[in-house]
Amino acid sequence: MEDPPPPPPPEPEPEPAAAAASPRRDVEPSPPPPQPRRRLLRRLRSAVQHYEWGRRGDASLVARLAAQDPDPARPYAELWMGTHPSGPSTFLDDGELLGDWLARNPDALGPAVAARWGGDLPFLFKVLSVAKALSIQAHPDKKLAEVLHALRPSTYKDDNHKPEMAIAITEFRVLCGFASIEELKDILRTVPEVEGLVGHEDAGKLMSMKEYDGGSEVRSILQSAFAKLMTASKDMVSEAISKLISRLNIESKIRTLTDKEQLVLSLERQYQEDVGVLAALFFNYVKLSPGEALYIGANEPHAYLSGECIECMATSDNVVRAGLTPKYRDVQTLCSMLTYKQGFPEILRGVPVQPHVRRYTPPFDEFEVDSCLVPPGELVIISPVPSPSIFLVMTGVGELQADSLSDGGKAKEGDVFFVPAYTEVKLSTCGLESMKLYRAGVNSRSFN
Image (tube, rainbow, N blue to C red; front, side, top):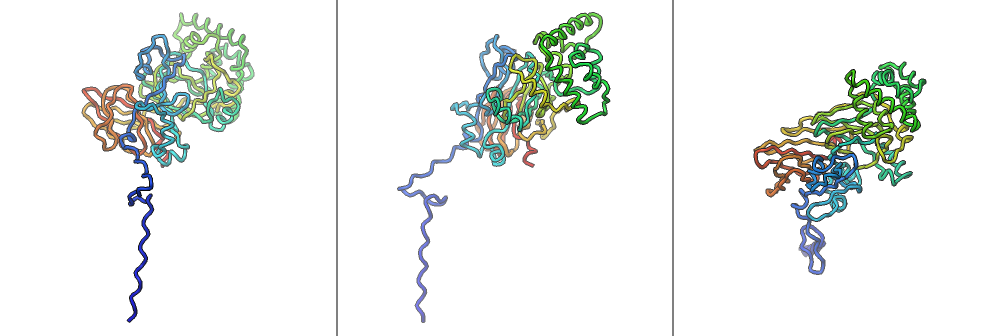
């Protein structure tokens, strides 16, 4: 009978780093993972921008949300929630920059967001309180933004595009996109001061166009006419505005002025002798009611005029200006970059995605916004999404609970919370009043 085979050699001990092994005494153990309570829901401190066009003192929603003791003489124009270096958010508990924390915790973005947008938050969330018209402006597409940033980094501070969406909180007035051919014809017929600056040749070409005409020819003629208006000499612009204002003041005594004529008088009081007063006649004049929204793509002209709104955009602060502003004007760039599309902008009213939640979804991957109205005694559960979210409490008092934590964050007007990707959030009220919140996150369509 043969001897039995020798026993097999002993299994090697697992390495200390293996999950099942206890650390050896001569190897320093790994640091403990971050505590879930710090990861799930954290309060943010938002940046306030004091642009001159903002509402002053406690008349500004921005000032009230920021919980400041406002200076009645100081404008409180914008509240920024995000990572843009011109107004970065910090955590309320330790003062750390949200952007720095995300760089160390990219899993909070979710893998798809972290991979596509370089480990940063792709959207910038804002509140605007507008007392005075903002500049006639457009935001460059990605390619142009890279060129402008390389040429003039002090003016164009980043290389990103800036599609955006505004959701009206109060009535919100906007100039957005070029008016239709028929409306432009009416302007040329009834406002000789504009026709004189555009010139008879281009005015004649525009007057001969039909509503069904389209394509590059119409855009070329409109671009030529608009550029001639915007580049007219200061003396010619000043004289044209003076004549127009004088005429409208006389005619207002014998007839009711149109909305655009009244707008011209208002803009002239804000920006005397500014070509933007006349350029406003070329654009669609939009009045959003509370809860209505519009979105603005790259290279589209617009100007916010008055009111208060929620705004969300790609993370950028690139603005090409050409009128209604004391700031730097880049008229040549603006006139050359515009699409010269015509037609009234699409108005969004939000689509119900669950009880008490409406979603505003623009055609841009970087962002979407939810409007949440939590009634007294109700529990609203926001399902996990594959992107981070920022919640802003607009009105009311309540509580936000993240995942299974029972001691959620108490929430009141002006509170801002950062919520990592794949986190369920429960919303409830305290007392007898509803709580109104807005949530910004990456557009859900970008994950399909």
